[in-house]
Image (cartoon, rainbow, N blue to C red; front, side, top):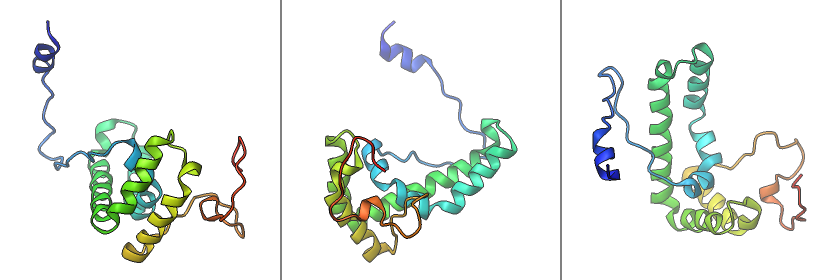
Length: 150
């Protein structure tokens, strides 16, 4: 049996009527990693609701509505990033793609993206767990690269 025949033979059941439709994010790992910290901040309330729901009940269908809200929020932010900071966003995620998704190799395009995101959307990149009073690693002007980043 060919792959085409196999693909058409498998029927994916439709979602229940009580679950609202949501499109897929439609982004690969590069753009998602580039936008990750902004998505975390922008969609914080939806993410927290989803995680609370998952703690209540581990059944996948229990939290479909909350999961769809997270997806819609991520799509909304990615759309705004493309509209307002498209060139900077593309430069950063393409750098990540070319450099094995290592942030430290893409700090220059990251700085321009962070600046644009703040100027146009009022969003700042905040890394959770950064010690108080220390400059976050993505804001250091002359970082010293070591095998293990601290």
